[in-house]
Length: 415
Image 1: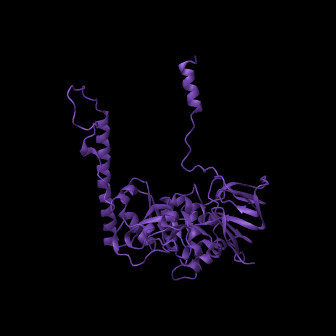
Image 2: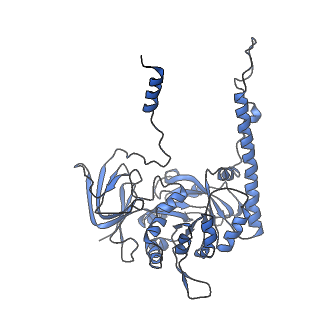
């Protein structure tokens, strides 16, 4: 007989370890696709020259310079093209209904407004936007944003994450500051109630059971008092409670450095995760944002300093200060999405490192949105969302030739 201690050790050794939350998912069964490219800009691991990208079941199986290819694989020869991850758009209101009432509306959901049959989604996909975060319109606490895959016959199919973040439109005004503070204070009170109810349940469950009675009991078989069971949260409060629990994040849209300072002053008593969505004028508070380890979503613009002819590269200034930057197309129209790589290329010419810029279009927004385990780079286990350019993707002369979405070519440019 195996000694008990040895048996316990054997059981411990054979017990599978739990995978990290962001671990790549194993490729699914399905047709095998091998794409040979001039260069793969993986983002996470740098460029790979003469790469082969294997795709199976809509996911990337592997990528490398000397990848063996099975005879049963369909081979796509694209030796003159450069592959990059599909663009991850961290902030958009395309497809949303304008004219929402101002106020505190955290219960409203972007996913409830989606029209999956709108041709807009196909057009965005053909311009390389394979993952899109959409926020509802509004003023104040505007509602819950969704992360979309721009394809599907139903809204539920399009929603990669239906309730991904809380959208906030902040103004540097007393009513705006009071509104967000009062909303967070209310959520704080609800969170305290939940924590007290959880503590009461723990105490009730740990209380020793009374001696068995000889009389039949008419009470339910539980030691948890009804008053310790939490009531369902108000839909207007629940998103804010999740924010304070750090189970979600806020994307805070504001116009510039003054609004940023007012926002941080308004919420200084609360702890939650926030990403700032603003104009390039944020460069004026770059040092403050860097010290606070902020993340910012910006349009890829190079502008003139106010009342001067000095050009300002806000993305470069913020990045050097330690701010994590992500880009969103500007203007937020189909034309802006068409010229998006060119606009980012202009920011690179003005001084932003190319690797930071490419990351700001792909992996950084995926990280800020909490979906970097699925999108944002070319690596094993991630969704096979790839763009193929006939040159450097940030070069004005390069054209988008093909779009692969979840392992399927959904766009090919005319010769």
